[in-house]
Image (tube, rainbow, N blue to C red; front, top):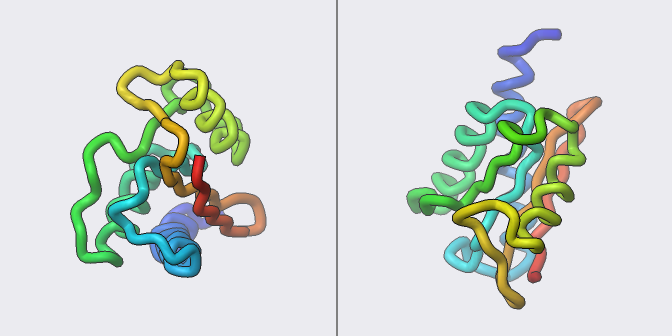
Length: 121
């Protein structure tokens, strides 16, 4: 594997897919309460989130990206639904969801497939 090329691919393509998804939803960036992202690499995820918000010329809000990799390890794209479950159950300290909140779910996985979903809880 060519780690640096994969990293650069993810840093450009994932934020772009997230922006396209959010734009098509008709919602503004300030409506997004949480971003749940595939957690294989915390440094990369932080860079993706930063670039996503830069596409809207706005700083990323503190606490926008809950993390579980330090608790559960890398379970591939299963980290996304696992995070959603933990949030809905109130099991991640400092992170909560309420009915009507808008969240973004995103992943990059095997074969370099990229997914992004805008979801209202």
